[in-house]
Amino acid sequence: MRLAEFLSQDMESILSDFEAFAATILPASDDMAPGELRGRAHEVLQTVLSDLRTPQTRTEQHDKSLGQGSGIVNTDVESAAQRHGALRARAGMNINQIAAEYRALRASVLRRWLDACQPEAPDLDDLIRFNEAIDHALAGSVIAFNAQIEQNRDLLLGMLGHDMRNPLQAIQVTASYLAALNAGEPVAHAAGRLIRSGSRIQALLDDLTEFNRTNLGLGIGVSPTRLDLATVLAEELDELRAVYPYRQIDASFDANLMGVWDGPRLQQLLGNLVLNALKYGAQNAPVQIVVRADATLVRIEVRNQGPAIDCAMLARIFDPLARGRNLPSGVDKAGSLGLGLYIASEIAKAHQGAIEARSDETATTFSVVLPRPSVP
Image (cartoon, rainbow, N blue to C red):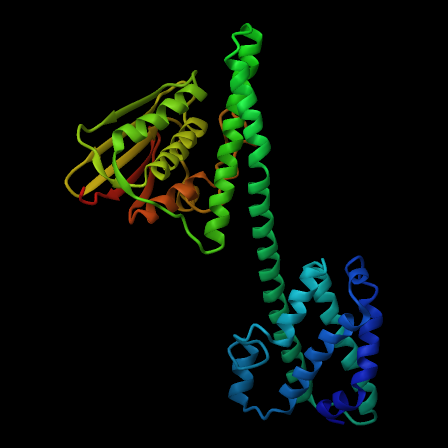
């Protein structure tokens, strides 16, 4: 018996086997109605059946086996396999459970078909095409599953960043109030610690929010205005010196740095670069910031002494969630998400600029080059 004929005749029995198995996949199956457990599997099998009934040349079969054919996985996001994967993600299933479903579906079909073929041998072309179709369906489900999981993650990050801002602001305001009371050294010390910790949490939330924007394809938004870059960057460095009074931060600016940029964004860029230098550079050496300009370009350099960054790390240093290893002793290893340099890079790109890093045994330097638009 040909497999397409068998599937058409025995579909309900196959789906009953599958439904019995799917009901054992907990806890996700508790949240799905019985019709949902078999409905998407029925769609997948109907698509496989249609695929088996479609004539296919050897070349087409070969291309399809390499994932290049026009099989059931295509650009149509509403395909049966993709709907199956998205439904399973929303139901709370994991990738192993998705694979187990397809394993069970494959085993049920092949076991029943082989029994129905007796005493004749099964058609090998049907067997090959069925396995290819199931593999394509699994691939489509995994693609949709991952897309749904990423969307859920982005929404969670967005809500987390938004909902944490109000309580954080309350903590920062209270800490500033305590610092202004002049209630003695212990209170002032505790208030200063709260202010510094609040600033670190604020920086983490800002990084999280910006990372989420880029993940959603929104990019880093900039609002350029006429400004004196020296003044803007000096303000950021003053805040960093207040948060890190025990570290030396030196700066040198050219005399004329008027231009058109987004000041707060460039403060964020510089802050991320300096924080990176403070964390990974030699703790007893200064961090040096140099800003130079000509008629068309501005170059911002942040330099720190310390161990050289190895070539492998340097190649991916601006990737999101990339964190350096071998932090100096005494440095908080949990105080970063590994997003600072990535966001600095995105801010530079948003200004049509570029950023690069170089490192040797004497120093590590981050260089940002920005176009200098004409001042109106």
